[in-house]
Image (cartoon, rainbow over all chains, first blue to last red; front, side, top):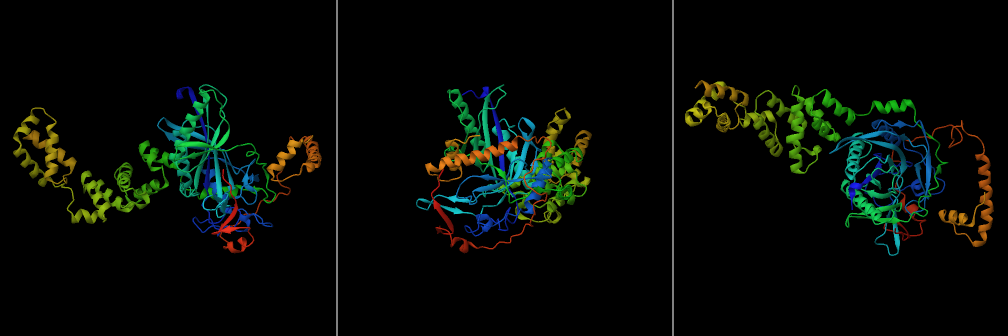
Length: 482
Length: 95
């Protein structure tokens, strides 16, 4: 297989479960993990005589998303019926949006090793989820749980603009971070709150027309998304190079075997016979409503990142990390607010350095960090005003992380205060110089490296508490002045 | 426009309708007439006409996001053909 001669084309469709209390068209609860069918009401069951009534909060979340990706929010959009037969869809149709979706266009910025890229969105539309079919344990029968039926989803569709599994994963991660950032979806992939379908095709380099695509369904982790796409690319290239043809079909990824498999023949499956749902008049969204939602939006990752670079002078790398998740940004903001007067770069270094290393070591989430922003702020204030040295600050952080406690109290009780008393430091240095006449000679003879030796010895003698700047200045004077 | 026998069978299959062979001819005629009517409508020039999904101009009513339904599983399942451990049972479906 000669991958280099082929171009990969990927588009993603992502289903984000909207973080509402009740369903999109009924007042049944959407709480996860309830006993089967205890949260499936007459509307969800498709019983005769019921009518769907849309949930305002689901629409509001679609507006938030549209604003966050710079999309057009349709003043009028239409709910449509997507018709197919399956036991976990009791009405015989899914209420979705077809010709006129609520969110149109928009884009998302992604970051890969190759740099920055903008992925354009085609649309995002509101729809209801189906129920669940369980095939095991029921001899010759399937069990149907309709608790999930009617759960509000936002299906977010990209243009076929991604060119590698790396880009697809970067997009999925950016989208995942965004929907959580604007609090429209909890992003829980194990529970199926955020799942991706990948449309994958390949074409010879330079060819304009797209190749025939396959759709890989229900990828519920970033790793599976990457592996499924990689397998599918290889499968399609090998198939074509062996003289075969890709058949347009839906495929399922099997993580145990690390392969995709054909799911169903598409003979009739794509004939969904969409038509406007006569039960639901047009969904109208006023300018006023959009403005109201906009006023309640948090600062978005993109503009926050720009602010960090332009106004706070952070490196792009640090700004990226601090805006990768809402939690990181919130921690940093809280730290800045509490660490009055401490340089923003120092704060960023600590969040992305010591703090993030400690979190990774402990396998925790930022929300569970054992040193909260106020505590870290107190530490950084003491570091910035010279009370403690950088080295001691790291030690102090370790103590606070493993044993708890507040910076100021620990500095006093453990005697961590940096020696800034010139007299005391001078004494230590003079003693050192007297003890190492050979090294003093070497230094005076032009061997600058020996300076580091004295710094190390002085730090050792003061248990790291010497003020580094002061130490350097004094040491230089003493060595040269002899 | 003429609906073929195969067209009727296909629509019936999509709708999960079991047709007797002798019924097909009748449906061919009925459906062809409906298509003829649609074709007549399509002859009208609608260049400057806004597409209309619904008659009337009102917006759909939106409800507040509140859980208002209680668990009525027992009542619903009383009329189901078969249930087991809270699940509705149907003939096995596997893809």
